[in-house]
Image (cartoon, rainbow, N blue to C red; front, side, top):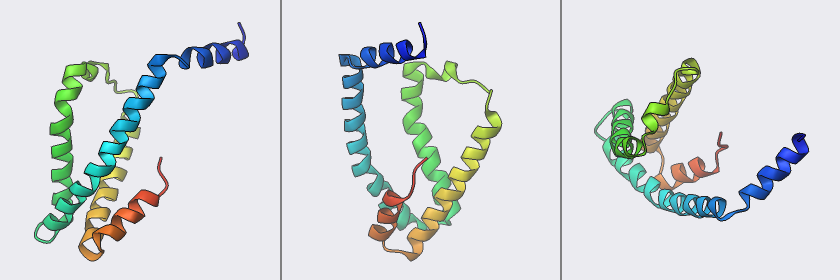
Length: 125
């Protein structure tokens, strides 16, 4: 079997109900996140008025970790983690932290709607 046969096999296999269920679930989760994310930003803007942006960002990461940890433990995916790309993950984490601190700092100076609009039209990775 060559690469073209592999591609046809994967394409045929991915057209089943498993893929459509995953797409449907992904769409539902994305819609939920689009409604929840601005609420988190509201609380960040209110908090940034009295707390430094780095602290607001750190608290956001702590809360996100606490919310996701039960799901990760339930699914058992914590055991699947490896340390192969540790340096790249550390770099990604640093960039994410700087981005979050910058966003919370911008919330201090900008209207929330403007900051969220810029966030949603930025290029994603």
